[in-house]
Structures are given as structure tokens and as C-alpha cells.
Image (tube, rainbow, N blue to C red; front, side, top):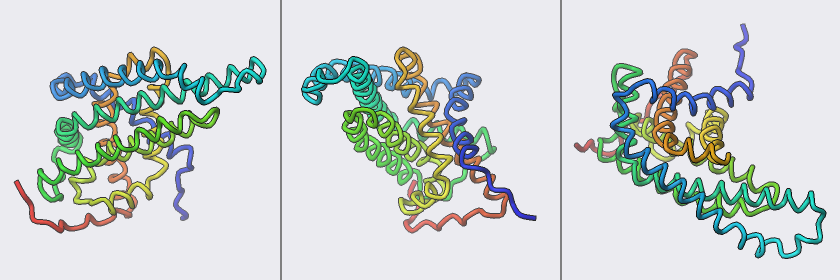
Length: 264
């Protein structure tokens, strides 16, 4: 019998579901709230600051990037301005999110471990020691922070800027929020890159769904505090689900052995 391969839309949706599901998982389990306090406060404050900074810079960006916009019709001018504002707001929100992820990375690692304990009853620890995992988590947050300015710059391009910025930010967010679970499985940068290539549809769906609410006015302010802990939970559960699906299909890839001595 030929094995049925899930279609691309189903894979995208399967990954996207873990973004709101992560928030729901957190809200239903008060014992996780103490770990979520710091990421929540950082996300709420820094995402809001990024949005305010983008809104402050938008009029100047309009004059600088669109000096001849008055030659267009009213409809075209409105669409150009709208796309520019959306792109700038996306960049500001992602920059704030990236900084929050960096500052909260040690707590996010603890939260990821707690989620795996709740879901599996144990935490896989085939990595290279807790110190290595924390360092990798911080490095992942730094990579996301380095990618954030590109989101801001891409968002300046009228019409296509906002969608491209969303895709770029979604990819970066998915990569960063699965690093803790993948690191515990002993995966270095090359192995994680191969894993994301294998599950590109699921991870991209997850990342875009996570970043998309930050582009909606008012909704972004309301949801920003939940974003960081919800992403940590959703990313961990996504890794666990894909790992279980691969094992059930007999396609699980062996975890590479540690190349460095374990440290405590």
C-alpha cells in the first residue's frame, strides 16, 4: 500500500496550530505561570516599544522613501502608505520580540524542559550538558536578534515588503523556538538546519502563525505578553509531535552522539 503523504496546506496548518495551542496550554496550567512571568513582561514591554518606535518613524520613512507619491491616484497612494506602515510595524514588533527572546532565553529553556516533562513524563537529555544547551539557546536568540533588522528593512518595500517580512520573521522565530528541544537531542547547528529543511512546511507554518498577530493593530498589544512563553511551549510541542510522527512512520533519524564532554 502506498503511504499517503500529507499535502502542503495540511502540513502548514499542522505547524501553525501549535502557536495558538501553546498559549492555550499555558493558560490552562497555572503551575507554569511563574516561569512565564519574566518572558511575558519582557515581551509585552519590548514589543509595544517596537511598535511605538515604528509608528514614530513611519512619517519620516514616507517622506524619504516616497518623495513622489503624490503623482499616484488616491487609491494607489493609500495602498502604498498602508503597505509601508504594515511593514514598519512588523519590523518594530519583531525587533522587540527578538530582544525579549534574548533576555529571557535562560527562562525559556527551563520552560521548554518543563513542557517536555509534562508531555512525555521525562526530558530527553542526549545533548552536551546543560551549560552547552543554555549557550546554544542564547546563540539562537542572538541569531534571531540579528535577523530582526532585516525584517525592518524588508518591510520598507511597498506592497511586497510586509509579506516578505512576515515570512522571514516566521522562519527566524520557528528556528529560535525549537532550538531548546533540538539541542537536548544533541543536534548542533548543521543537524538543526537539516531538521528544519526536512520539516520546513510545519516549522514555517508555526513561525508565521506566531508572528502574524503582531501585525494586527490592537490585537498585537493584547497578545504580545503571551507571545514569548506561548512560542516556547508551541515550539517544544511541535518538536515532540514531529518526533513521534517520524518514529511511528519508522523514519526517525538517529540522534548524533555528543562531540564534546558533558559538563554540569
